[in-house]
Image (cartoon, rainbow, N blue to C red; front, side):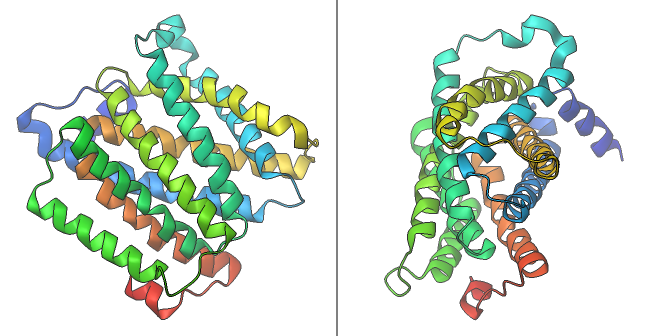
Length: 288
């Protein structure tokens, strides 16, 4: 209880600094729990997008999700005042969100036409890219145990995708492009976490993503019904919670510590796909 009490308070402040050595083990455990929670929320959001009634264009879904997320954060962080906007890394915030909006647009497009188990399997290339980039660009260490976990993750993903054996259709290709953009986004999030609070990073995410996604939504815009809007609110809540947990996990531990736990999304995605869409992963997916 002492561990969860102390670390949960640090998480809820959204401004926690990386821990000293005596507290690193407990912080790593909390960071891994947060990345698992983030994956649970993200896969829940995927289900919401697939279940969304009607025929709203994916670009509009992304825009409305970002608007609602921004409104949520304005209410949540409003008491912090203009100090929340203080940053010396506005260019990096801009780059992070440009990469993220490209990742979102390609991901949501692929999500609608690809089974959930395969969606999450292909999404696993993102933490692989991000982990390697963290080693190359951020100078993070990759001890043997973490390297073994990463290698197992790569092997499992290859078993599921079976490149050269199973042809890639439009949906998986879009998801691979999305994974490339998201892997780069994860590295920029880690860079920002060195100097920016989680609150500032999340706030700029919503502030910049909203106008960027609006540009894509304008040509395909149609007003959502009350039922569709209710679904969009749920999608936005899950997406915002996922990104808060993700950013805070990076703040508490190295990317090479938390990213291997992102593979839990395969379990969540397979479970939701079976429960909501009667999608049964094939034998090779279970092996992977």
